[in-house]
Amino acid sequence: MNTTSRNLQTIVFVLIAVGMIALALGGYLTSLSRIFLNPLIEVQAWVYSRFQVAQDLLRAPQDIARLQQRNAQLEAQVSQLQAQIIELQQQLTEARILSALVDFARANPENRYQAAAVIGRDPSPFLRYIIINRGSDDNIRRGMPVVTQQGLVGRIEAVTANAARVQLITDSASVVNAKIQPSGAQAVLKGQASGDLLLDLIPQGVSIEVGNLVLTSGLGGGYPPNIVIGQIAGIRSQPQELFQSATVQSVVDFNQLEIVLVIVNFRPVNIEPLIPEGNQP
Amino acid sequence: MAILVAFLVFIPFLMIQIGILSNLPLLQGYPDLILLAILAWSLRPEVRTAWQWGVIGGLLMTLVSAMPVGVYLLAYLLVVAIAQLIRRMVWRLPFLTMLVMTILGTFLTHSLSLIVLQLLGRSWSISFALGTIIIPSVLYNLILALPIHAVISELAKWVYPVQPIYES
Image (cartoon, rainbow over all chains, first blue to last red; front, side):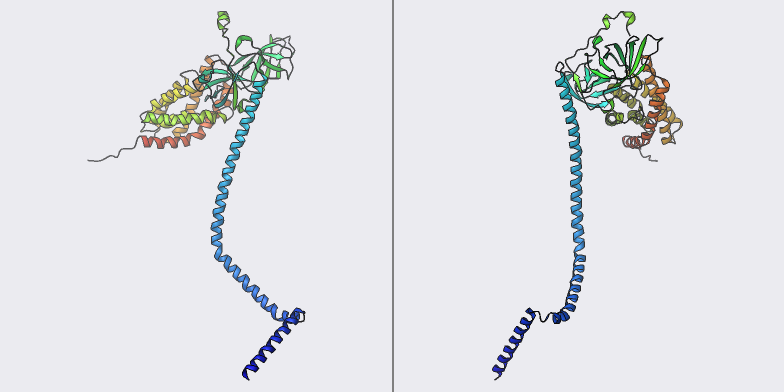
């Protein structure tokens, strides 16, 4: 009896459950389920959000430590990359300069060049000399002209085994025999105390203009001919004077010299013994 | 020891001067780190090798510079002489003495250079040299005088440690 009643209860329960499921699937219990489920969902959402907050709170120090570590790693990487960029930029600049110098050397095959890096300047502010990292071990000799792809820089004044001192054409003791193009007039280029270049002893009859090119003339044997020096920037001409003079804008930026070329197959000629004693400087 | 220290000080100073500071002129004036080091060393009361520092500094500058031989040597020895004289008179104000000697020393070194260059036939306008080289160099040296004085003073204390006095 007991067993029969329990089986009956089970069957009724199953039928009710199946009926409820069928009603639910058929959409007949939606409004009813909303009444019961909505508050439960709200409560569940609140509980879950509180749990999340608590979890974040517990996990935060661990995250901060990990983020800080990662940040430090990334910062170190950024610094390393920045250093690499600077190094590469420097190499690129050097490569560009060397490329221009190679082009210059190819364009002037009559000369043999030795490239040298500028490693310092004369410590005296009254003198305009640079120090280069090539010396007698590299066949550098006193008097050899120094140029860049732009034009004349100066000449070797003193040499040691691994370094040499170059007198710039802007030094106040520098004198270069020059010629003006297109007139072909001869003149003497002198360095000034201010670092400017003065073209002196230009004959009065010669017509010169601002923008005329100034080149080495090769006279006197101190420099090879036809090396570009600069352009005439201003003319000073007085009718009562024997000669005109002009200021020259050099094509070389002497403050930015990094790599120069020494013309190693040029041997300067010392013409001093040929000058009469009274005319010697 | 003090002579060895002179080389250890002068060589990096000279490298900084010809490699870095000579590319950063104030108008056309450069600082003279060797002069400042010699001055700071000479003004220390415990130092007994100021003349040797003057000679070493002068010779190193002569080696590097195209300035006629002897100009820097003579200038630095004169500076040492004046510094020692002033040190005996004003020994309580080392920083002030350093500043005054920086001005005097720079004027002396540059004036001597200018006179020698004029004698060798280079044309220099005194007013131009004063305005664009000497006064800017003085200012440049004044800026660097105190840090160099501090460094060299510490070095002098290390080279010449003060002996404790024991009373019997």
